[in-house]
Length: 179
Image: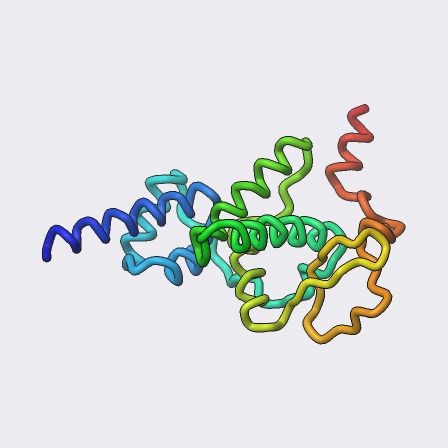
């Protein structure tokens, strides 16, 4: 019985380390593992070399509706839904795998990473709570994150109808200045 407990704790530690390496916040670690807060704090400091950031988790669906976060969130959700449909993965393992796929895709295309693991996890929780849903764009046919219960007739995504200020980020301004 004691060996089983040690094995389970070892799995929990490995899971916590993986999530920390991917940028998980303390609230996510506490929610997804059975390790004590003190143990998680020590692990975080050991893995990252610094104390975890303080502050509350995102609690509003509005962040996911803004132009760039919506595109990145929709990309992540497409990876997650693919895994759920075509593998036996679900829950946290599916979220982590979909997030790794998202990061790989972003890196491959030289894009800025907008979605953190904690935001991706929160996004899934908002879907599960029926606060968000996927809506099909009438122009491109893609599935995009949208508020639940919003009208979907005639929905046009942020890629087909790019806002005037899209891409006018501090990073883009710094790159233009450097060029």
